[in-house]
Image 1 (tube, each protein chain N blue to C red):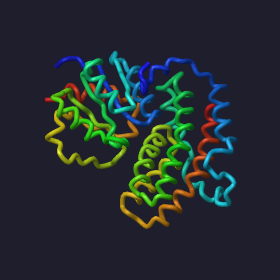
Image 2: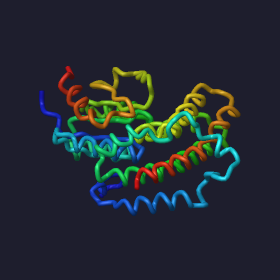
Image 3: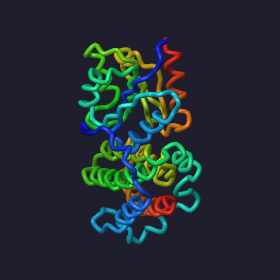
Image 4: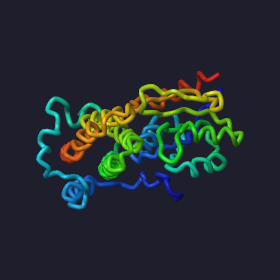
Length: 126
Length: 159
C-alpha cells in the first residue's frame, strides 16, 4: 500500500473547509491538503495537484458531490474518493459509476480522529 | 492565490479583531435578523446549551491559532444561510430551504452551536418531508433570535 500523502478536498462551506484543512495538516501524518470551494477548481486541481485521495462533500449547491464525482469518473479519473456528509443515511444511487469510493465520513467529524480515520480507510481499501 | 483556496489561513488573527468583528456583526442594523422581535426570548431553548463547551473546546484545541478566524467565518456565514433560507420561504421553495439549512446544521454542529444546529436540522427535515410551509415558517422565525443568542455566547467564549 502506498502512503497517503496528498488530499484534495471540496466543500462549499468556508468553516468546514478551514476545519478539515487545519485538522489534517495538524495530524502527524504529514498530509498535503488542498481545499476547494468551487467544482471547476476541484476538477482542474486533479491534473495540477495530483492527489492520492479525493474528499468530497455530498450536499453542495451547483453540483452535488456524487454528480461531481461521476463527472470526474467520466473523464477517466480513478483517484480513490471519500464522501463527507451531514446526512445520517447516504444513499448513492449509481455507486457503480463512482467507484473507487473507499469510505464515508459523517459530519460533524471528530477533529482528533479524522486523520487516523482517513489513513485506516486508505490502508483497508481493496 | 486561486479563488476558493484557503491559503490565507496562516495569517495571524488576533483575538481583538475577532471580538470587534463579532461586535460589528451583532450591532449591524442592516442584517436581516430581527433581534427585537417579541419572540426573541421564547425562541431560545432553556434546556439545550447554546454552545456545547466540550465540542467548542475540542475544536479550539485542534484549530489552535486558526480558531478565531474559523469562528469569525462562521459568524459571517450564518446570516447568509438564514437569508437564503428565508428567501426559500418567500419563494415557497422547500428545496432551497433544505439546501441551506443543511450546511448551517453541519457547521453549527462542528462548533458546538447546538441550538442552531438542532433548529437547522428540524427545518431541513421538515422541508425534505414536504411538511406544511406554515409549520416550517414557525421554525424559521426562531432562527434570528437563536442565531443572535448564539453569537453573543460565541463572543463570550472568544474573550
